[in-house]
Image (cartoon, rainbow, N blue to C red; front, top):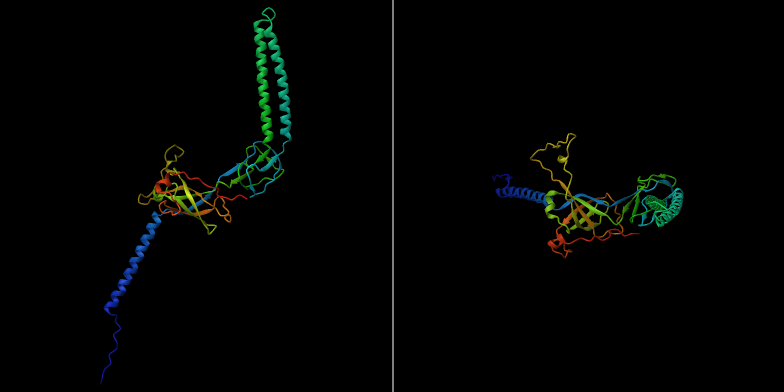
Length: 325
């Protein structure tokens, strides 16, 4: 009788070795990939800490009065020279009329005093003493000074009257408009602000460990969180200073030094200014938007015909970044 032995289910040595090699290979590949990604993260010039910036012009009246005209609305686009508001001019018109009257009086008084002084100066020493001639000359000089003061007061009154009409100093968008016709505007207190539409740029805050790879003139790729399109720009400046908490003295004038672990050092972030080359009309820039920025070295930027040395030294001329309505 023939006996049938069950098949041997144990894996062969070859298969066992192959499994171990595949496992070790996958582990090594994962380690190498992790190391490469870490090196790329630590050495590549990119950051998610970017912010769209713009110059904001604070509009404050230089004279006080009630607002009688306010032809603009919040977030409205205005051009340089457009009327923003009118402060009631009646009081300043009266002040100008009074100043012009004072100029006329001072001029008449000056003419009279100068004529008297000249008559005294032409008389002989027998008719009038030297002291009297000097006295009349001094009175004429005082009248001349009073006339100049009246002219200055008139010019100031005319200037104040002109300041009742407030116009936009830049092209931009009205923001933080909290006033309305009838409100009282106070000299030196902000009424509204205008975001300069020709001044948008991006401040990217890079860790100090990657600053050696960033130069003025380098190409920058900017991705706004609000839009899928990618923008390009140029590095136009690298910050030369950041606040150092340890340099601040306390109330006694002593240095305030925060305790830190010597084996843990956090890289400081330095602002890098980037001017955008072109902004599509369907992208609405606003100061404060979040951006991710990566820097392309001059030698890697195919569209940059200049060499690395030229890119670092050549001035960057920033084109307008907004298409004005």
